[in-house]
Amino acid sequence: MAVNTVRTGETGVTPRSNRLKAYAKLGKLAFFDFYLCVLLVWAALPGDQLWEWQSFALLALFVLGQGGVVAATVAFDDLTGLRDGSDARNYQPETGQLRDLSRKPLLSGALTARQAWLFGWGTVAWGLVVWSATALLAPHQPLWVCALLLLTVVLAVQYSYGLKLSYHGGQELLLLFCPAMVVLLPYGLLTGTTTGLIILEALLFGLWSLLVSLYSNMNDVDGDRLAGRRNLATLTSSANYRRVIVAFTVAEPVAVLVAWAVGAVPGWFPLVLLPVLASRAMQVRTGIVQRNALAARVLGIRTQRIGVLSFMVGNLLAVHLI
Image (cartoon, rainbow, N blue to C red; front, side, top):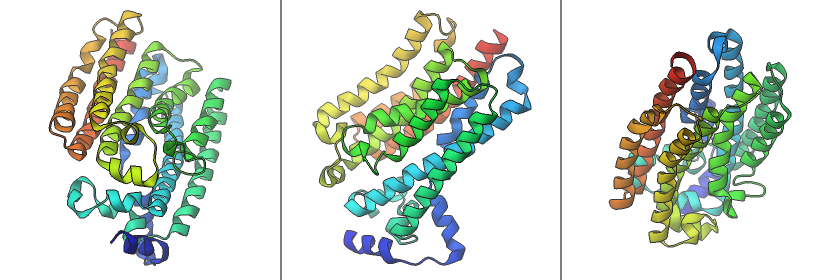
C-alpha cells in the first residue's frame, strides 16, 4: 500500500482546477497557528505604536514572508517523507480525522515530487524577498535582527532537506528556535530593541510549537526509526521520552516564574498562564497517562491558541494599562 502511494505521488496528474488547493495543502496554509506570533508582538508594542498603521503594515508584510518560509519548510519535509517512506507509514487509515491523508497531496497523488520541489524553492525565494523588503521598510534594522532573519530561513529550509537537520539530532532545537524567532524578530524590527516580556513570549511560542510536535513524534516513532530520523523519540525509550515531554511541559510555568522573579513581568502576570496550564493538564493526561498521542497533539494546538489569546490580554494590560 505504501509503495503504491509513493508511485502515485511521483507520477500522478492533478486537474488544474484542483492544483491550487493541493499546493495550499502542501504549504499547510490552513494551519494558521504558525502566524499567531504577530498577535503577541502587536499586543506588546509600546505607546502609540500599538495603533499606528505602519505597525499593522509591517506585521502583515512579515507574515507574508513567513508564509513563504513555512510553506517551503513543510513542502520539503513532505518531499523527504515521501522519498524515505516515513509519511506513508505514519499516515495510515486508522488515524482517521486526527491525521487526515488529504492534507498530504504527495501521498494522495494530487501533486508530483517535482511539483513539490519547485514549489519549495519558489516559496523559499518568496520568503527571502518579502522578509528582505520587511527589513528594509522597518523603522529599525538592528544587525542582530537581520542576521537572525537570514539564519531562520536557512535553518528552516534545512529542517528535513539539504542538511536534514531534523534527521541528525536537531529537530527539537529547530522546533523551538524558529517559532521563537518569529516573535522576537518582528518586535525588533518595529522597536529596535527587545524586552524581558517579548523574550519570555518568544520562548513560550517556541515551547507551544514543540509541545505539539513532541506528541506527533511519539506517534511516529516506529516510522521515523525506519527512516533513520534521529530525534528524542527515536533515541530513547518510550518511558524516558514521556519524561522528556513532562520536562518540557514543566518548563513553561518555570519560564514565567523566572521572568517574574527577575522583574521582566509584573507580579500578577503568572495568572495569565492559568488557562494554558488547565489545557496543558488535559494534554498531559491524554498523551502521557492515556497514551493517546494524536489526541494530545490536537490538544496542544488548542493550548497554543489559548496561550496566544491569554498572553495578548496580559501584554495589553502590562504594557498599556497597569
